[in-house]
View 1 (cartoon, rainbow, N blue to C red):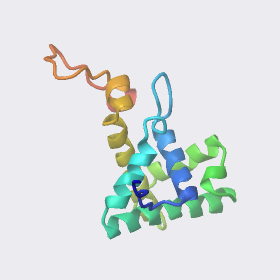
View 2 (spheres, rainbow, N blue to C red; view 1 turned 180 degrees about the vertical axis):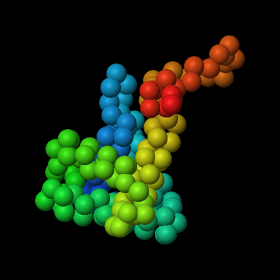
View 3 (cartoon, rainbow, N blue to C red; view 1 turned 120 degrees about the vertical axis):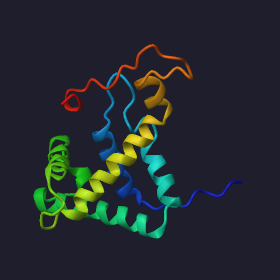
Length: 151
């Protein structure tokens, strides 16, 4: 019988990570981050990460929880979706040099980067979202057409 994988995140932390991942890449006509297994992948990478990287991630996660408590009086996972989004958008707009925001800004950038990498290297992201069909010559490459990226 195979030994269970060690865990870094407790149940509460794992749920918060899953919610954040799903808010970054929500389910639409294609699977979202949660359905694509992104939270499990993040746990997998954290187990194998160095102590400093693990500590930095956990500190950032705890920062998110403290911020949710300070702004809304309850843990991040207990907030309604609108408040979760507002909290994360506030962090994304913040400058890391603002007093008290450095850990949160760094954490949100880190979890976004990890989520995007994990999603777009998953079956759901690569095949269903991007429509990758294997090694084939393309006559043209249809780049990203998201308005935010067309500036």
